[in-house]
Length: 157
View 1 (cartoon, helix red, strand yellow):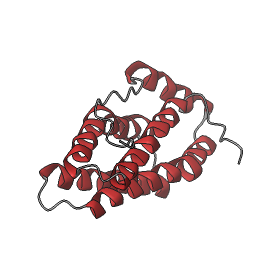
View 2 (tube, helix red, strand yellow):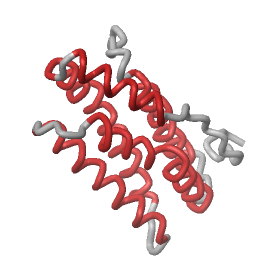
View 3 (cartoon, one colour):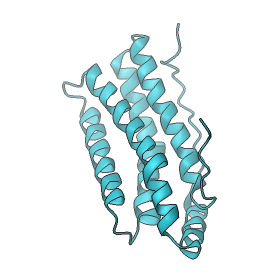
View 4 (cartoon, one colour):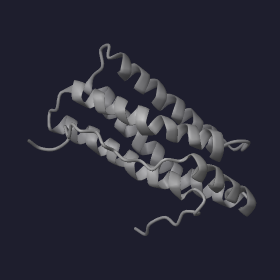
């Protein structure tokens, strides 16, 4: 499969998606390795607080701002559902392996939706000027993801 050519003004968000897919892989692999749910829980909160929450806000406040499109609404609903599940996991009450798998599945599906459907749609409907403005705004606030979580619970011991 050919890699998707992304408009340079939103490529920073696509790069974040790569790390979010790794986040999903680490959760799934940690579960396969029978890592404790507490260790995975700690990683989920780390990644949410350090990266994913900020990424969602950049998309919502910069990329989606002022766009009335059903795919944008769908992405925002997915952000809300993922945020709610992370809030549930954060409380730590009766959290199960299934919920961790569900989170990985939700984030994975969301990223694939954005990359395959939403971003190409936005690239086709936004003017070059609008995309350029988005690119400038993202560049001014965006921080590159560095996943520096010390506990490599996803690796085979």
